[in-house]
Image (tube, rainbow, N blue to C red):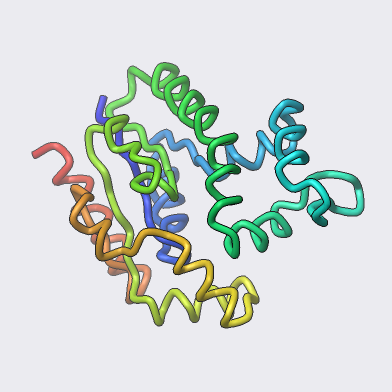
Length: 196
């Protein structure tokens, strides 16, 4: 079994690569999805998050934690971001390990982890794939697809370790500056190279 860590900075197109791999029948676990479930369902996590953001407006009308509201706070406050990651990441790592064990008979398994390099999780994987896109393209995607104002889009991009630094850490790089056909061709070439 080859354990792949898939990562990419915000709006790089990591989710599209992830979907393509899933369509090919490759088992994928999404660290973001795990975080969302933890913040929606894990009582201990919910209590810790409430305590961390005490006095701040982080709730939806139905009383659940508002991830978008929390996102706006932590991307402007690196210290809060770090504390939130300290709550979530040990549990995310645990879920990824459980996922690997559950799928140990598969040829390839993929964990999609946005903060793979930020959290020094490389040792969990046999290979890492980084999805990249030019900063201008990523800004455009954040503003048009997610409706972020320019200032918030820049904040989101700057909150992560730069793509340039990550290029030196990744085993494979997929560029996503053009069309879907070219992206899919690059994914297929990368999958072929995994075995070399």
